[in-house]
Length: 99
Image (cartoon, rainbow, N blue to C red; front, side, top):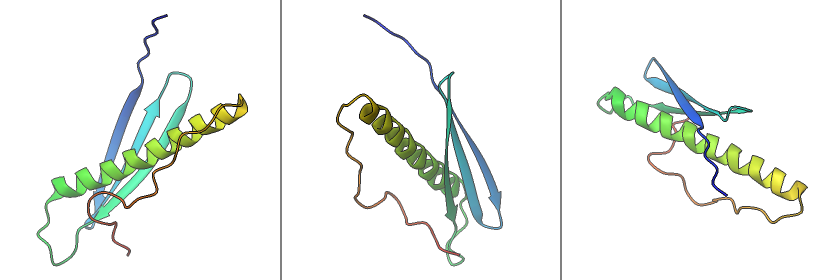
């Protein structure tokens, strides 16, 4: 049996005062999940907005992926199946700065 679906992911980025915030939205046609991420430029570093965009977007998509995995786990548990292991290692890229 062949099945084809199209899911759409949109990422919105907002930069304000050296902090970039991202929201990644997945639409499956029947539901929507949203992930969030942020990045802050160290005041001693050269401000390269593209780097903040990439870090914030990747963190939002990683958050979204975690939410999608948790949703799949809930659905698998509901039908008596096993679950997908969660990644518990370190994150990728520079750590998020704490304000």
